[in-house]
Structure formats: structure tokens, C-alpha cells
Length: 136
Image 1: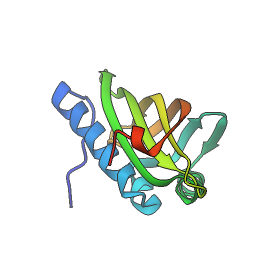
Image 2 (image 1 turned 180 degrees about the vertical axis):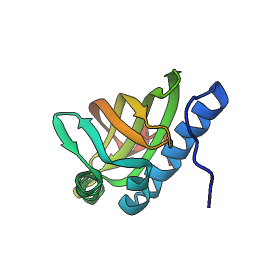
Image 3 (image 1 turned 120 degrees about the vertical axis):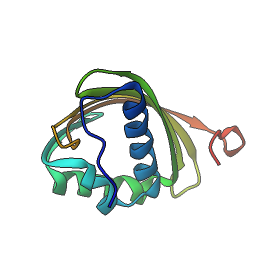
Image 4 (image 1 turned 135 degrees about the vertical axis):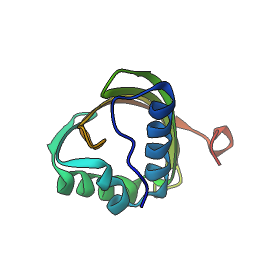
């Protein structure tokens, strides 16, 4: 079992927390990803607002059913004692083969055990051609 990365964060531990999140999301495994969140975690994703692991899992299942070959990169933007902000980009394609790149920012707040209790995400999308992909 891996020791969780807990607040208070340092530059090193904040970077490790961001990398762990990137790795988990790139697994595209909702069962794995949801374990990083508190049971009552509050989310805002674009225009959706929901609470709890079951809602997060359902969201991720819907997301990855339509966002095919999803690949994400996250970058630490800033951190405080129990909060981290990241900038991210991800690419995916839909069932018709149209690729897109999404850019966004997330603000995370953690409990004392290192589980995310709040996630706010703002995201913008652009259509790209397959030849314009950054992440392979």
C-alpha cells in the first residue's frame, strides 16, 4: 500500500500529488480514481455540480465512454497548506473520430488524510485534427 500524500504540502509533495492525480486519471479507471476523493467530495466540472464518490464514479464512467483514447497532462500551478491549483490539457476523440484538446484549471482542497474534499474545474475545448495531437 502506498502512503498517501497529506497536507501540509511542500513544493515536492504538491508536485507528487499532481503526478499521482495525472497517473490515476490516465488509467481511465473510475474505481481507482474515485479513491482519491472523500466520500462527500464536492465537485464542479464545467456546468455540472455534484457530491460524493458514487456521483464522481458515474461522471467518470460517462466521460470516458465518450472521450476515447483520453490522455491528460497536469501541471502544478500553486499550492498552500491544504490546497493545490493545477493547469491541465487533455486530448481525446469522439466515436466519429473527431479529436479535441481541452484546456483548464482546477482548484483542489484536501482533508487531513490527503483525500480531495473539493474540486472546482473550469475547462475549454477546441477541435483539432489528429495530426495536431500533442499526446500520443
